[in-house]
Length: 448
Image (cartoon, one colour):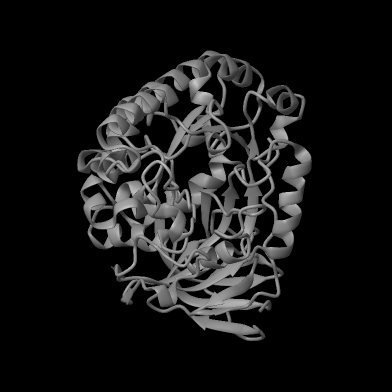
């Protein structure tokens, strides 16, 4: 559904302010913001009492396409994304085959152009096997390179465990280097301790002790030290510990930071007490840790040591999740509910709407230098999310859109609802109805 659209009398949340105004969309672009005349406009939406956000940019998802599409694919998971107000995503390289060269990367862009309802970008995978091939590219043109998820394919693929590889990569790479920060050696030592005690099915509540604070902290500190040595652009993915938050700065603005980090929504929402209720459904790597860690992550998000919010959306089938501990797959689907989770924190007085928009919309666009998205500005792409802050609903199997068909948030009641989502000016989601004729666009990197 694409036409000239005028949204009237809506509360626009943008760049640290909330302003009641009108907004005109035409040709996929935000044309005007202000008090505007309705005459001659194709579609008029009354936004009275509603809040308009820039479309969410999720900087870390695993949509499983190609090769693992029994879990999810670029159509199903992008559909869930737009229903949750997410209009753009950046997908990780641990699909099958792993995205370790430009040919496979370009093929993912082609598939997404045919299937994705949201805008899309992809990380190029990097490990010891393809390091020279990656560095031979003009890496400044890439959204980023990452090792995330590649450790599932082969031991030793984590950059955080390979200081020699990090040295070479950080010295020569011109793009963001986004890494999964755990020391595999420490994790394996812990695995052996608990395997001896419990056998192959370790109780999942020991997961945060196996994938421990020490494994995370030591890996993150070493990576930051090497990145600082070369002034590399290092981004630490899905931070999980309060201890690690003290390794990051908040005394300079985001565009000047070489070292950045993120928090994924589940590390703000759950803590180790929830393993008893939800078991392996909340088994993630890095692990959900303590209440103290959860509160420390929120504090660091609010004071700008943590720069962005992501989901690390990682669907698996229930059968894959419920296997014995060492076989149970880590990760869970979240992209349909990330904004709702953050808005619950707003309802509880823990975070402002302006800060949510900064961390989920503005800062991902700044961090990844995404061209003309992430802000409600004239001349920018009309990626927009219209929200009702006074609408209750409960997550159930019937309203889940994930291909895997489950969520750790089932039976959770939210008190806010995404009612419309625009992608490139097209109304793609409208109160449960989808308009799928127009697909999303590839994210482009802003020239320096």
